Image 1: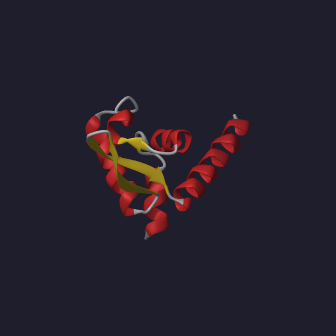
Image 2: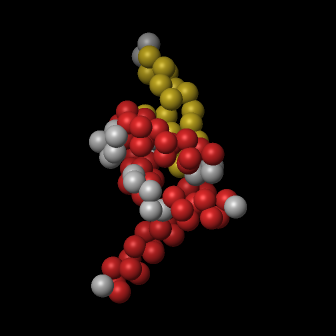
Amino acid sequence: MEKKTIIEMFGRRGFYEILKALNENREIIISDLYGIAGAGTVLDRRNEMLKLKLIYSKKVKIGRRRYVVYKLTPKGEKVLSLLEELIKVMKKEE
């Protein structure tokens, strides 16, 4: 069931872009992702990615403020790598 769920997510709005942003920034707070898609979409993708263990969260304190930051798991890095390879293959086909 999990493989099917991840494959279904490939086509969902913001999925690839969020994984890519997390990979480029190493850790990110959720509001930094709102430029990719609307807040509701970003929050939905976050919840789905957490459930599938593609990302994880940790709490950090910066100054007086506390934030929840998100990072890719090794599984998330692998999924992103495979997705990027698939994109390259499809572009060659065009």
